[in-house]
Length: 325
Image (tube, rainbow, N blue to C red; front, side, top):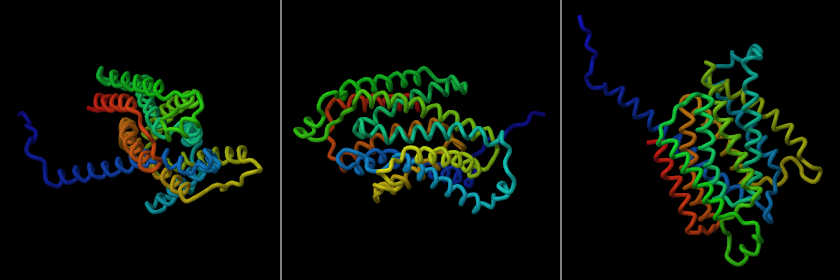
């Protein structure tokens, strides 16, 4: 007797669930793009005489603390507090220290880089993390890439080189800004920091996804493990880097608190993507957020974009199409 599978149409309830899932993922994706793209312009708005007035380490600490508190609240609301009644095994918790260290370094690099480049340069060059993350996915997790995807990575690398060449400025930036207004620029030190940032970002994303998916635990509990280390590491960083001239919250304004809230939300949303989706979604967010960044930089900062800027933007758009089609 041959069993024939039911090949009839899908039930309306199943179709409805699929559409609801797609809408929810779309909303999550849109929020992440908006938050990610607005980060650099918001940091620029906080600058006083070209300098960030607040301590970057204290800001990152507040972001990590916010994520920890939200994760604790989520665990309580979902009645998962029984998992905290006994100390967890060391082998279960220890792996979360590695991404906490990597993310702590990366979060501080994001703030530090703003002093050496404009927001659009940061957003374009940070797309190089797509290449570093994909390479780590391929070599560390055994993810196979199609030829078109490798071509996309090559386009991204070329886009970064083109943008760096067109915007590299080792001269007197103040004179240019006084005569022509804010222009796209990046220093040699800024280019080096971007490369370090992209490598650390790719490693952190690959390792975090592996840890989150390898342990069958509630996401809120895994976030608590991750952010406990984040709070501890960034707390020590804040203690050592805060000088006697600045207090912990000195220089904080309404915009700084918006940055803290946005980055905390973005980190929590990213953990959902890495747990239930794929790191590829994260890379797509990075690419699409460039448009948001450019629009906000134009509207809020009056940044002037040179015609050559359209070349790397177009190359990144084509690369994203080839990678995700």
